[in-house]
Amino acid sequence: MGNPVLILLVEDEPLMLIHAQEALEDGGYTVIDASSGEEALRLFSEQADQIVGLVTDVRLGKGADGWEVARRARELKARIPVVYLTAESAEDWAAHGVPKSLLVQKPYAPAQLLTAISTLINDAGANIAS
Image (cartoon, rainbow, N blue to C red):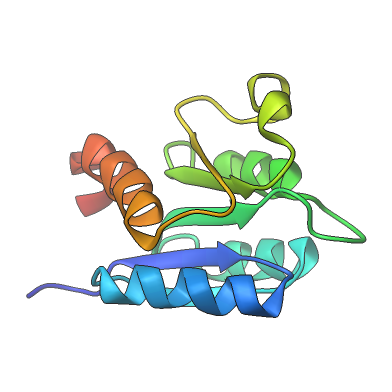
């Protein structure tokens, strides 16, 4: 198999972070995680060329929220697949989400998260491989 497929996971709730990380790793992805928007933006700027997908909670406490993390990530890597996770911000997705992203409503089954990120990565296809 080729290089690991690296996903940046942003989640400030420790149990939700573990749940999402296990789902992604069980699906064959390599995960780096951040518990705040600022940490996510730092990690993304340092490793943008290796990261092939972003999974972010929308509400991240103080500082940058998931909407901003995704917008800033897209500024650095225009076609990065983005999956938003949220319990109560789904109605804001159309106004705040980046184009060609997906939203997974909490609580979710691991398969829902895997399907969302895999679909976006597959759709981006050749752009990720390069």
